[in-house]
Length: 67
Length: 451
Image 1: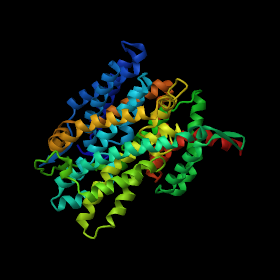
Image 2 (image 1 turned 135 degrees about the vertical axis):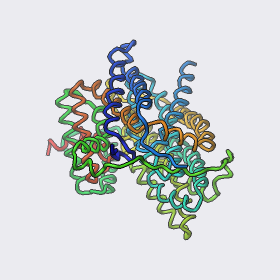
Image 3 (image 1 turned 120 degrees about the vertical axis):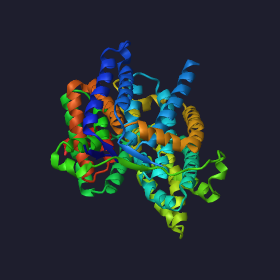
Image 4 (image 1 turned 30 degrees about the vertical axis):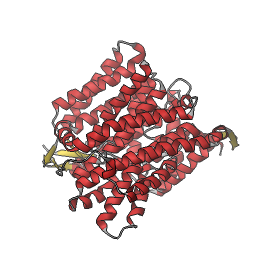
């Protein structure tokens, strides 16, 4: 399947459709169920980064590095 | 004590994180820095710590974003775009490692020049702070005097937009959009709109790709080919890398950029001064190496000057830098005051020392790592971190903050502002102008309504 060029990167819309919900779900999950209610935003940010880690693991970069 | 440790930890984390972000293409400065600055401030962190974090982050980010330019000819951030043509000329002549090390050392010079100039200048301008905050009545509307600096910035940036006519006409219209939504929400929301503008160009491109015909035009077969230039071992001694001429030019143009970035776009300054320097050399390769090197220093200087002077002296965002990546410092984050007004209660020298510590720690991490391991880091990131994961991270942060701002309506408000911003940028209006209109919106609409 062909990719689209977005901001000088090749992006798969299918992968993006997986990564955005993963990151958003992790962010909102920690936001709504924050162990410290006054730090909801901070936990939301931590959630977003967890989502980023998961997304990076489940998707492959569309770059071919030539040395 | 714990506060100092927390600050050191924050600076180190931001230096490492933004050094890596600097390597990746498509990482716009505002999109990657503002949402996190916003979250740190909203979560109640001491603005002094967030300021230290911010300085550590910009120093690392602006030092590393030219590495992919030198190694691959791809900009690692919007600010590194003007360096691409010169890097290609240098690379063709086998000078990739020369510009890599010169660029890094120039960034170090630019950073310290900017801190020295920005805080010294702020010290002399401090007596004007109260004068700038005083209001004059214009058409029955109380207009603070700093607004005219912002207004000058608006005019400069509208004039330098590719589409000048639309840029000027959109100032009142975009202000009305912002104030209209604020009226509907029933509160002076800033964060949602700010983030909406930030991700605007990317959102427009993304949503446009759902249109079959448009998608065909941006469809690419195969993978993005990235060529990594080989690099030999580089000495850590900074004096071995830059010439006297490069040091002098970086100091002069770094000083000018520190001051001018209060109202002028840092990218504009990088282009302007780099092009000016190129005219001093007859040899094309020499001209490109000089321009590339000095531009690297200007980037750091403009970013630091662009935040420090508005933050310390003016107390309001007056240029594309202060209204953009540093924007969260000037927004009312729900406590009736902005981080900038909180920071102004500290002595200017205290903030200068914080900036100096943050920059030095950041450089102590970034400088040796970049000189020695640039190639390995680039290889790892390009092979393991997908663009989708990175874009998703920032979209998720925007959704979260938009929801926190105004609930579900906030998310749709962000969508509206982002698509309009994206369309305006595509039509040739500078993104920096939109950030500045956001700051000027309440005064602009009040004056409009009295006409």
